[in-house]
Length: 297
Image 1: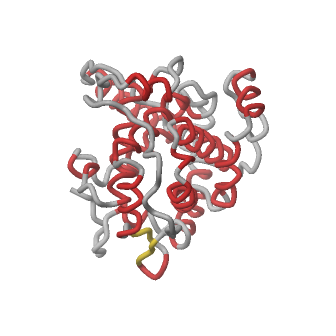
Image 2: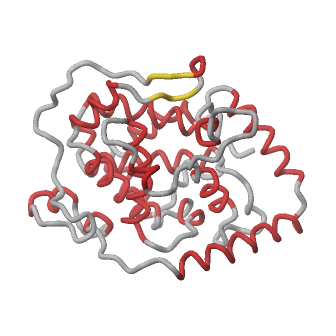
């Protein structure tokens, strides 16, 4: 069940989606509050969250993993083998050879243009790329990359691996696109997105001075680059209509956490087009030196 804000008909998750307007104002106010919080309060909150996280991690069941979670495997080779994935219980496949949708789909909005709204167009795009399984391929690969990344790994507080992380994020994206029911809500995590991010901000892996701080511009840019790289790895860049829609989608939601981040969505999508950029990133120990520290406030 979604958490409700007293006096409002919208859940907290719905209100978070107003990032292009009211959400960014609340974000700035929250950052001011956090910056004024003393170190003792942060340490106390961090200790409590990390104790809860430890208990959660103890209860995580052992599951078979997905070959896409192993970065030594190349997605296109996995698709060619046509073997049943031990985690997803189905064969992974490439995007369809020919897209059925020819016209670009723009994001739909509600609440006066502030909140994202799923549409028949977004549901059609999901169907055209091969359905929700294709999204989960992308998100599994994204987390496989994120766990190796110098910046993003510090936010990872759960230890159940890329496939489980990818399933959760994939379910959320699929539900936002529409056409395949409510997998995110059905998983029992409806209304928990902000709570999960809060735990990430207080992750024990972060430097004590950084614990409690929200995602900053450099964090967002690294996140977007790896997300679009993962989409490219599983072939989603070949579907031009999806790619156009997804850049908009990511640009909208990243703005909830950092107001200046959406302007970097296209640059982030194009970053992984360059083998030289990827080679340098890997050679540098999975560090995006051209991004880290820029725009932090």
